[in-house]
Length: 306
Ligand code: MLT
Figure 1: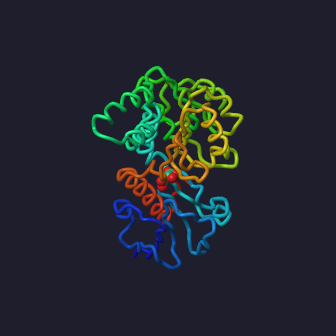
Figure 2 (figure 1 turned 135 degrees about the vertical axis):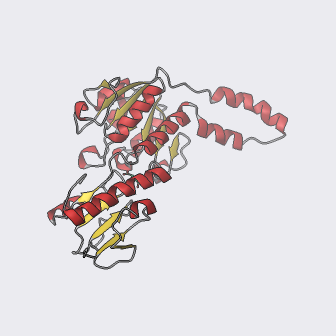
Figure 3 (figure 1 turned 90 degrees about the vertical axis):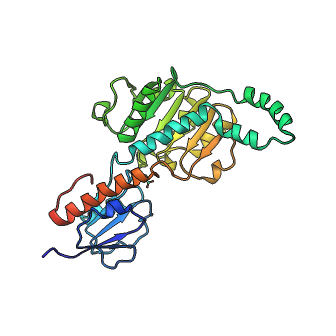
């Protein structure tokens, strides 16, 4: 008879993923002495992780909310779902690029602020039309820093939109990059990407080596009027340096997927509530991938993506 297993969920995990766990598993948010944990974004660094836990599965790509090193010393693997939400993030990055290129957010605020009769507002529209005129993407260069699944998906989409793409990854060689399209120009380092790009998008994990990867000095290497997109992790960019660069008109816009007091209310910042992977499809894909890995490990001892 199959051994009973208990899985603690620290976040809502898609039902399609949970259905991949064997029937004899008990799953829930209030479970004592679990064999495994399924987590999305909950911060586990201060959590007292029960000694019974044999594996942890993160329904997403990044594992910076989990004390991976401490767990590996205990022999507890941490699984993740590389690529499972890459399409969702890619779509939001492209949306972010278009928002910035066409000045959509300040243009909406401009219209919201118009007063008077319809005729008066239409007249005022002329000024807005001129002030918020934008740029098109074909022929512009997108710099992609981080060439895992998400970076490669974004590169591919940008090429399809007629953009030139230059890429670099601080941790892996471009040849090891995930399905990177051959048209992507290979840069030697971060600075090379920054010098060449009109739009720069970041897709690296948050590690000691990538904290403040984009700092004042590196922003100095960027093209005047460039757009910075951060759908990776907040700590990869120095917020203060970005604000200074936006105020000095060095950068045109900062589009990011996190709230931060330093960025709040700035007219050239668009900050989203970590929406990159928040689609029904991505949530299902991630949950299915990690539930299968967790069960395969608990039942058969197999390790994939840890
Ligand atoms: C990721 O690392 O893939 C994202 O943070 C996923 C999420 O939003 O949960």
